[in-house]
Image (cartoon, rainbow, N blue to C red):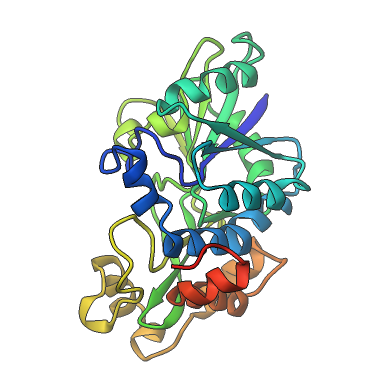
Length: 298
């Protein structure tokens, strides 16, 4: 059974960001804003791409969808970064219909709709554990075609003020690594699923017993404004407030917990919690990142 991953890299289309970004001018101002792109490339390089490169099961395809009209420095850097990662295929398009873009990919995965296939999703600033594809292949044998798979245990890394922190994280049907097992004739892809809502209408397999993901919260998670690049204790998001106040080590001023460090060591043996936190802290300085990566300056 073939396994295909899907990632949108600042894709200009009809998606969760595309509803607010309707023209190429909007995309240039918001989606391809230099501050945002410096941060997205930094996290793509430091967090997502290593997790794809280090998979214990290399027999999968990871499709990154990006837009032809994205400025040339970004197109060129994306191509260069992924050129030596065998699993990665960059799909450049001017089509704003993501379903149409992925239709031939879905058909290819199912051997022209003659066999079941597995599709998972991953954002460009998150990561899956090194055993993710291996575990996904095993889990797919437990799920009838048409069902979904959620590995719901992982770690949350977030920017809190100018400091990065880590905690363990459990989230049923989290989008990170969420997968669907397609029937041979199905046109389903992971971006058509509304996370937990889809879980109410199809059978699913969930496994929270191992650390499966790194969920990254930082200064440019969305496309709405870049003047304020860090959040202070007075304007924390609800999720960050809940995490800090509900974790004794973090509430006491710590940056991580023994549980989080153990999860990171198991899931991402090629790095450390300290290195991941340093990468997240860098997102508070997009101008420095742009200069370091030789990208257009904000």
